[in-house]
Length: 292
View 1 (tube, helix red, strand yellow):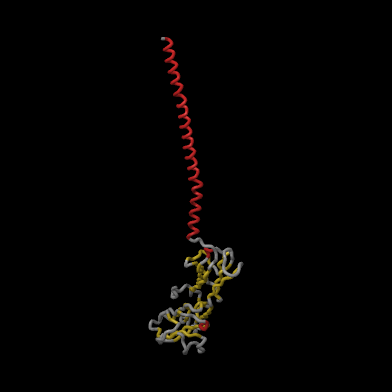
View 2 (cartoon, helix red, strand yellow):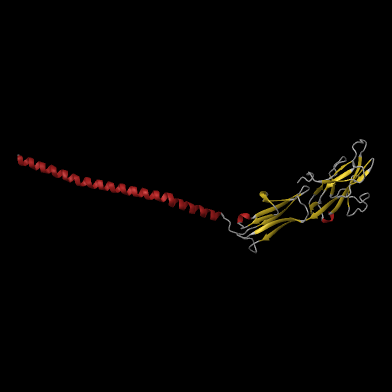
């Protein structure tokens, strides 16, 4: 996840004086973050560019949960003059980008945040600031039919929920790291099969963050093992033999039987014909003798 990548956001300009050339731009709606993950707060600041001698010397972020004086004094969640590290990381610059990246978001981090920058000419605070909301990403299994362990034919829904007021969020589902074409907070299973077993991941995406949570499904049922596969192969081979080989064997046997019958018939005819020829020959000899 590239948490530094910012998407276009609608914004409002916060100007603290009548000089409209000074200001800070925040998202105009609350930012929703998932507890334990990271979120970026997009931010842009500006000052009179007509005065080239103006230089930004210090950048500050404060949480109004702990700062009560409009961010003019400590404590700060980020101070460019300090080398301390925390969950609050400044990923902006000293020109115009004041984006804040918050790691390992906790419920206590919810609230209003303000950016303050100090130049060699003046100092400015974006007031009012931007609101951060923190929630848990929950993936739930809701049984529609069946009870106990999951079985084939059972019906259920997998639901993905974030208790946050964010209008531009998107839910994406995947199974064993293969993404589904459909999206939405609910994944419906009208009738489970063994093939539905696996790890299902819901990814919740906004302009500022993208977080995921996984749930596992194990559906009970008969799985084809090696023995079953061989049985299927043998049965299939037997059927193929009955359909193709057996008729051929029967045909060959009938043809051989017919050929043998014809041979026997021909042999019998020859046996009867030869004695008749011999008898004719004897009668001819007798007639010859009588004539003599």
